[in-house]
Image (cartoon, rainbow, N blue to C red; front, side, top):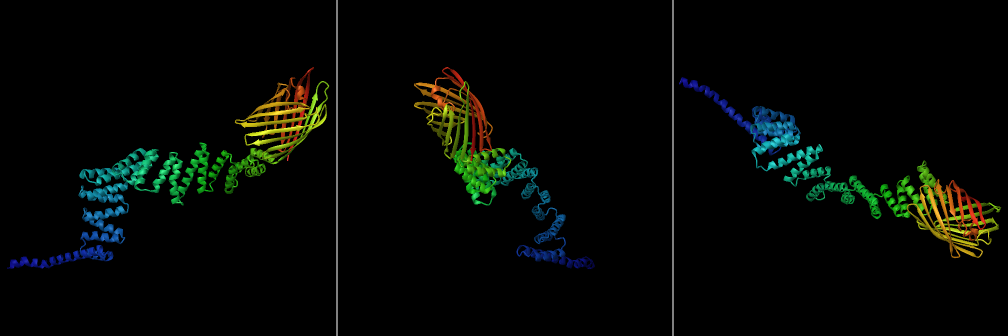
Length: 630
């Protein structure tokens, strides 16, 4: 009995303590469950945290409550305390999958990928074949852009789960990463292969196809790039990035019309995006320039006008359109277009100069001179343009008064002869007309009146007409008339065909005229032939003239020579009939000097050897001229 008492009394003393511990465990679980209900059902994280703290006070080594409290701290934005609780759990339970998952997700969210990788490796240390954690580890390597890590992890997964559908996606992700890395290093060939590998298993992978499109463009594989673009648009019709990239492809292949057509809807849809507007304008500009180079002037005009409809202040388009009108010879359109350009840029020399030339072509010399002067205001050092401006001012003066004097000296006791002339000339848009009065002293005194005109027939042809009358023979022919038509041909050729009529008393002679002239730079050479008909015979004459010009066709030195007598020879046309059939030769030289464009002085000396029935005589002519334009 004593022994029984000795054994059981201590046991009975300890029994209340066991019952107390069991009751305490029940109370902590109750608090834990209430905390879970407050967390998951009511989202009352503050109340849940109070219950969790109370439970931990009752049971400081209840690790599940620490895991829950970490969640509560995170929900209340106290990340550091959450990490502290979770790490405490892992010190005592290193393989706690729930806490490892919490920490993994937290570090992934915070972009602490190396920490996340550490937690994935801890989880896999417990179960290396855990598929979920292998996939998480692969995702970490993706974020770290570690191709080696992705390859190793993928190899692990393949060894455990050969037929798993997720492996294909992982392989695609691996190729995608490799392609992006190669793309960043501009290793186009390797990048292209990686993206094509992705597309082989995932044809609908938009990002892979977009990158493949970029690589193909970088490699100048434009047809392949177009195929990728078309497939992207088939899956995402109207994708603005792809449409614009397709427009760029057209541009790179020189198809500027297609490029402009592709980007035009984007420009209309997004009028405030300068990239589309400027690309559209640049492509049309390239197209117009290409059309001009191919001399497709109508197409170029249409394209420049298309640009101006959307960009009315674009001076490049206005300049291009002006060039088209210049080529067409549309002077009115040149002037109108230049006026548009000058309204935008008043000092633009291109518009000022082309407008000046157009006015000149139209014969509006006063307007041309005024416009040319504006060029000098902005560019006073242009000497060539200064001379051109002075020439236009000269052309704008429509009147000219001229004085001429021909002095002839003979050998072998012949008396000197002379002809003095005064002339008034008026310029018109269609040409010019002049009246001339000649007073002569040779054999006797007499006068002659002449009317002379040049008439333009477009830009290539013009005519010369002259008619003269004198009652005094043999000083002057009774009647003389002349007509020639001239044609200008490239490069620098001029041809003449015409006729002359000369009447001295009752003797009438008809002369055929033909000439050819050629300009080489500053040189001008003319050969004119005459054939005078009389009594069934034809008597030839020829005159060759060579000039070297120092400026715009007004100052020059000249050499001339000829054979025979012609009706255009003012010093001898009064003896034309008597000279037919007799040889004569002449040679001469002279110069003409223009002074400030409006005043011109000239002098020519000429020697003539004229055969006569009983021998020959020598004749010396000196011809003076003074012309004043006003």
